[in-house]
Image 1: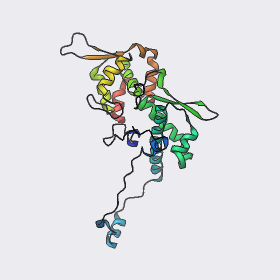
Image 2 (image 1 turned 120 degrees about the horizontal axis):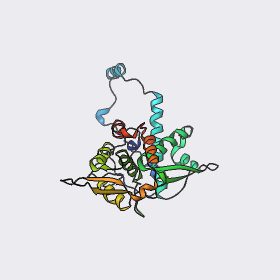
Image 3 (image 1 turned 30 degrees about the vertical axis):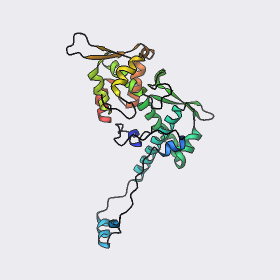
Image 4 (image 1 turned 180 degrees about the vertical axis):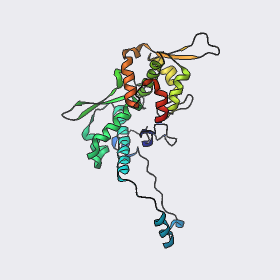
Length: 276
């Protein structure tokens, strides 16, 4: 599965309706080059060159040229999205990553902007997937891809070709913490809806979200899902499961605030609604 570049750009993390490019393990080169869809159109016969008057009108009403700085930022964003695809390929293959790999396969002619591209890709890996890109061998510029906050579960079944779901899990744990160590199902979906994840609507990365959070995360003991006492019709709530308590509340709060640029976690829904 390839992640559309548009989905990985800041402020546009909702699902791309044109997503769904199949995963084909042909290697990192094809993985990255396929991650960006390029549309080309050929001129039809009716699109032959404009008349001189049309050219004059076009010149008089033409838009100003794009700001070179904005063009550069777009190029850096695109490379960062491509790098995320490459890093996820390496994560699925359980292979380490080197700076040389990233420069050769992804960055290429943008080597001078490598630090900024790497920073943006790392932030998106953390925010979307809960995966940390950590330099483990500075001398040889070798990196490992690790699950954030010491978690040992990424939401993927053994042998499954897919994407880690840790980012969603950490977000849910943060909401539960913010709500006083328990959050109603409605409160959880309120936050997930803001990020483009809806109950009953299959997500191209996270699959069927309701099953993921009410069954898979519960089965792995990261969440508890139970009926609220004395509710009719029945209402349900989420709590931290036993395995989630291996993390500190503070570490989850700090992670969410840093990734989403939220100064106060109590305002998480408002800040997310502004960001997406």
